[in-house]
Image 1 (spheres, rainbow over the protein chains, first blue to last red):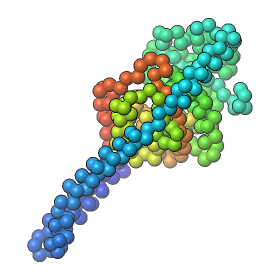
Image 2 (image 1 turned 135 degrees about the vertical axis):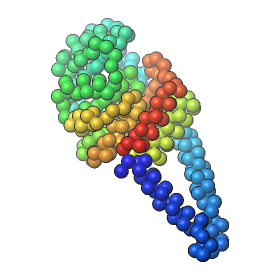
Image 3 (image 1 turned 60 degrees about the vertical axis):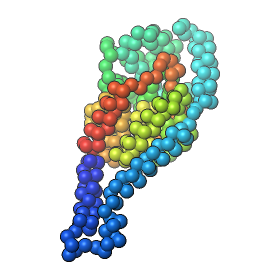
Image 4 (image 1 turned 90 degrees about the horizontal axis):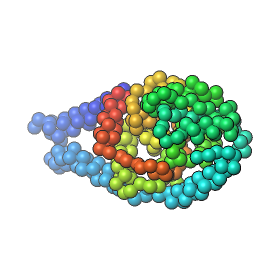
Length: 92
Length: 209
């Protein structure tokens, strides 16, 4: 199954469970407090995911390694390689 | 030479106007044509076809793909090899996002785009690898051949598709943190066009794999 397929199945499952409980006809309704919490749940989850995303990307951005030593080392290696190649007869 | 590892270098140049061919030819004379294999192409073709073209001449059991502009440092190759032996991996992927991997030469905006795109990719594709758009990787030769038959995308998405398809086909992937030093020569640009085509490619992979 494709990732899209997995998402659609998952959403369909959760969506129908939520609809069955939250939008049930008067005879089959779960108790009032449960219904009050259930109704806005999808929006809450969306917002929670949004916050998680921002926090995660923000954290990863802040901890993105800056390879200063690697850049400096590379310059050294380039110099050494150039000298070595020149000795072996390379002309740039 | 000193490491005891048997290797050859295959250089594929599509007629770059900066004198690459001449330098490569001199290197071939210096190190021998069993070590340096020049396989140029007449005109500028894509990266995917470059892989296919290069593979035809590869005689080893493993293939390391890397950028030739020194943003990928060869010093990581022994680490790739060590990692591959450690877990008998089919693919070893260099990652800029884990361990002490990282980048030099990117401003905040570029880093944000990179992290944001990677996060979106992780959420949608759950690929099991931390860096999907990187192009510094070690492949078992047969694995690379099989993947090239299946992959159809271009650009950044091509690198992503390789990993996603590899997972699909049951290949194992190991990771090695690498440092990516950008803009050693020339400029690094990430335009709106590339972002749009990345998103299109990501959604295509999302819907088809």
